[in-house]
Length: 288
Image (cartoon, rainbow, N blue to C red; front, top):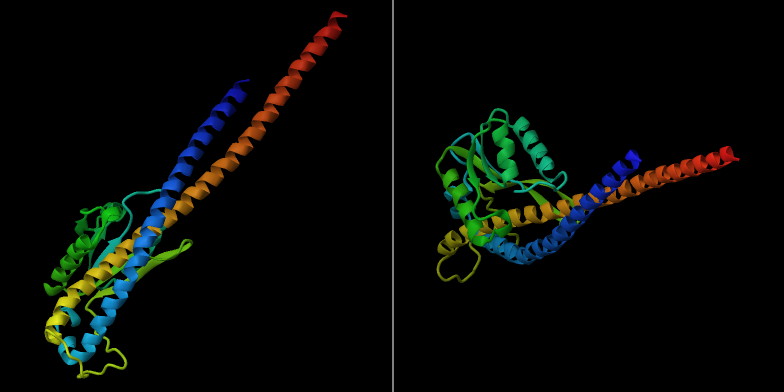
């Protein structure tokens, strides 16, 4: 009977875990829907501001390409913004980011890297490996990120680039493609690429007020801020998609384990009942 009591306790423990993982799955699903809506809503603005900057670049021509943010930096170092999660229990989300980071380090062994981190898991990963973190962004929390917070991150990276010690600035984040597809992605943040828009050659007859240069200088910070915001919000959406998937798998696994334990429990219980019946019948026969 001690074995049966132990099985009963294990069944109860697995059931409690199943309730917790199901609750976490429901929370992750709700937050996933929220952040997915924000990511989708931000894309038209991001596309429009990118199109406007591209058009102004075509109007300004070489004047735009010769601005400091559009030229390679003077140093050899590479500034890397790594976006991870603040919490765990999100499957392989963080490990995939770290794997991409290690591959990047292997490819650029001859260039020193300076790390800028958003997300506690990334900070813990780097500090455990004795890698210095140049800046760890903690305010606002990733779940509360807005354009003001993205502006702060973008300005920090721009200041670092303009200091003259870095050749370029890159961002590693997890791009959200669908509920079941999200993968780490590298994107070049600085220097800015001044691609000329097709159909709008430099010197096109466009009336601008104020002049194109003034508008361009005001648009570029907004463009950079928008790129950072989109990267952070996509990473956050991917995190909750991964957490939802992980918690669903954990709930299913707990259910399967609970069913298996119940089967073993019922078998042992039936064996005990059968043994007791045999003892009773044997005792009755002996009395005869």
